[in-house]
Image 1 (tube, rainbow, N blue to C red):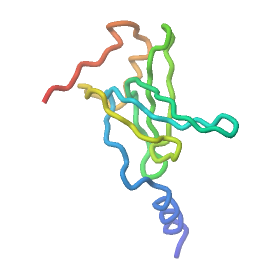
Image 2 (cartoon, rainbow, N blue to C red; image 1 turned 90 degrees about the horizontal axis):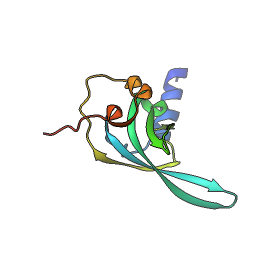
Image 3 (cartoon, rainbow, N blue to C red; image 1 turned 180 degrees about the vertical axis):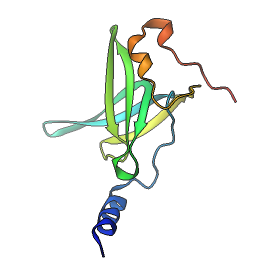
Image 4 (cartoon, helix red, strand yellow; image 1 turned 30 degrees about the vertical axis):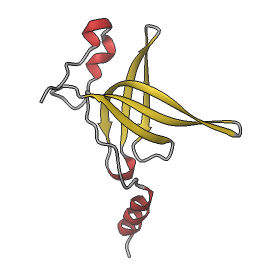
Length: 117
């Protein structure tokens, strides 16, 4: 067994069997586990998915929201045990893989059109 096969077997063991289905531009609610001392709680982070990158067990996604007029971004590993679930609220209609241009926009200009099928 060579090194790449060993790495693949370790990574496949760490992956979630049911990864959440969402795309860039979607508005999502991310239920993240937070440990405070000896207590665990779930905190919801709702915003637009700016980017997804990586593959396999290293895949991450970034979500941006406006909180009191300040842009807040968080990046999570997709297969992390700290991500309880990802709930899609609305689908976004975008034509690119990374929505970095949203960082410079405020108000109505920072919105993404909804995808209607």
